[in-house]
Image (tube, rainbow, N blue to C red; front, side, top):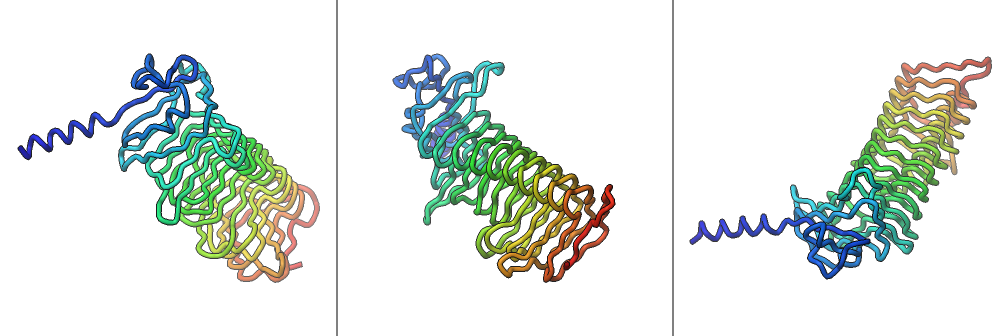
Length: 351
């Protein structure tokens, strides 16, 4: 009897994982959604359904879904995420999920969710918001190969503790990706034509392999006080209107800027201010920026300190290649290649 019960439980758990289809033209919310011929029609039907770990919800390519915010009320499990993605003719455009108010996709206290091959646009506040309550947790959220545009924020990690953004294009937002919570990786994305490409201030965060261009500011880092530890590596940060990289409000305690290219930005390649400390800048190429290559500035009596500049190529920037303000403390600069094609002073050091 025990063996039989275990077998029934195993079979039941396998049956619970299902694939649902959504077609805004030919679907019908009275259908069961379990086949393309019996697809649902609306986001409202999707958000009103409780899903199980391993379920997939597939939106038809070439269709637009605009009737409601997609509130996600279900969670997946480790190894069995709930997946929201596309289906249909691969030659047709990605399915579009759009909503003009507040958010397009919103979740709170959810885990193990994947969003893949979707175009998500609109949202008065943010296109996708990840949030958690004081007693819950949002984590293991994956947003992959999506196109995200519109809203004050593209992907806004309001409160959450871990996830992956990979292979996405994010544009025409106030901030492309914003997080002040730990554990996120943003990888291999194209982030462009936003006010801020990426804005982070947290720890255990990796920003790598992205192309960040045509924003007002490429990357900004830092908010408030506390534990900060972010690695920025292998990014191409180019042709942003102001700085390629800047620190802002608050004090950043530690971080690595490594193996990036900062080129053609209207302001400085790297601009550190507001008492930033513990930053290591190494193995970057910084060239052709409209301002300084690397600029360490004193602002509101806050002095950058414990900065290491090592093994960088810094060349042909319009301002100084390196500008270090009077009072910058505990600065180490070694093994950099600094080159200037025109006959002009290439550095300003403590005035």
